[in-house]
Length: 202
View 1 (cartoon, rainbow, N blue to C red):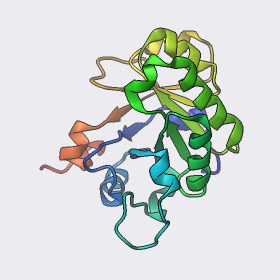
View 2 (spheres, helix red, strand yellow; view 1 turned 120 degrees about the vertical axis):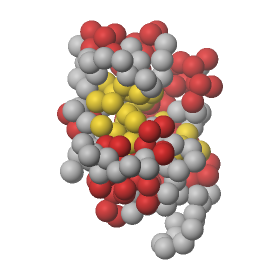
View 3 (cartoon, rainbow, N blue to C red; view 1 turned 90 degrees about the horizontal axis):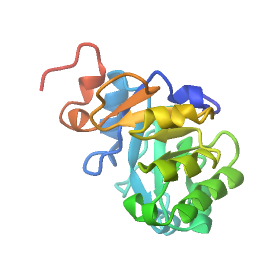
View 4 (cartoon, helix red, strand yellow; view 1 turned 60 degrees about the horizontal axis):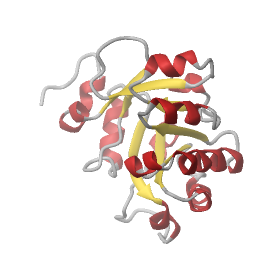
């Protein structure tokens, strides 16, 4: 994969970001081995990235394997467009995608959230795709206009009706069709082989 497009986020089953086990490459590699299309690492705060030292073959806040590089989404937690871009530039040659946002805190400042996404889209080369995950319809409408490639959301129909070429990934107790792909978190944490048509028993 040289460059991700919205199509790369379609027709997939993804390993969702997990706080407890997502920082370890072994769990993500096991999920890929058993059929996950893409895997998400845990969110790493922008300042932690900017002050970290890149070390090969040592324990760290985040482990990454070259084998998973084409399938790994690196999440950057941020509340500042400039810091988001700086952090993304530090990691852009490792994983291929960044996810920005500091969780629910940015729901109260939608203009800031959208400025972060726009800054990332404008500063990063086209092969670095951006993804967002938020839930309110007004905010989703604004996010759709920032140039993202993928949106993880519960409001599938709303995003589809926008007419934008944005892949919609459903995360959180999917109850029916309509999304482009789905994410699995809790089941994968207890059994990463759940992506396989014939998962191992735990």
